[in-house]
Image (cartoon, rainbow, N blue to C red; front, side, top):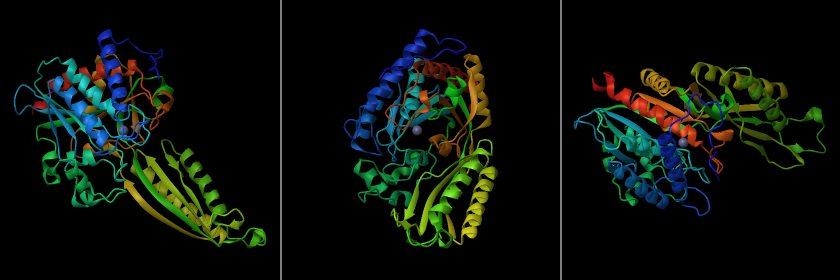
Length: 427
Ligand SMILES: [Zn+2]
């Protein structure tokens, strides 16, 4: 598959060196995409055999760029490009190396390759600050159904409960770490160094917003909060032929009415997204009125108050619908993640870097969770999105434009200079 050249609309054309470096970063993503646990697709999960091969490859690239590389107890690859002094303040740049099943080539990996390219562009020249490249071992939550294992280790949030979580084969996180030749007892050493002053993540947008605005880059100011849960309507299962319409307690009909309300609620509020992605009818037989209907609910917004009030409104609506039909209703929440703001001053620095590089950036929300969301709890964090052609991600057709990568590199380079000169960095 060919990488498309960026379409028109760019303010300035990145120079040839940037384009060449961008093309190399894209090629490396494609090369890494061929390192997989499942032949014929790209699937690389936490501490899998393919992950080991990918780590060896990325480690050699980091070392060639002048980094000293370690692997922490969570399997994160950490490449330190030293500053002028041993205790130089550090900027962390990273993203994840694991993938969803049958993934594209750029989700996560591109952010690691852009960080690496920035260090390579220094050509051995030392900055006052150090740059630590972080290739997280686990973000997608595929193997253990718990996401962010890598970034949680970086912020000191890997606890015994997480270590005891088991995969489909009954192997715990702790056992997987030991099996990989690492020591879960040394997890505390995975915490970011006290010299760390900030974290920057480049990531594909995985959505259609930048493309719709004809822009290459986005600057994330907030990662949306999420509520996930399940609604159950309880009616009475009965014969589809012999039960008159007025005597039915049809759980699926109630659920259908409610799903339309979910869509109406989200369409009525700016920035709100609400999804019913899974529906189950019980007993689920064509000639039986469903006695029970279950529906998942996923609600996201940058503002936690708006999100919570939307969820409350949808639960009330479900109650109303159930009451009106003589049905029972129950709601259970499985996830409450508050919205996470990126650091205002680092984000502002990215904005200034973009102006210096003469690249337009769009301030935007991220509807998806990222390592940046976890790291932001403990370290000033900024996040840059690259346009996703067609808005496609978590799919083999995932793409990125080389021209957009070149612009990301230009902004990243300006950011590095500004971060290196900033007084706060050296406080
Ligand atoms: Zn990702």
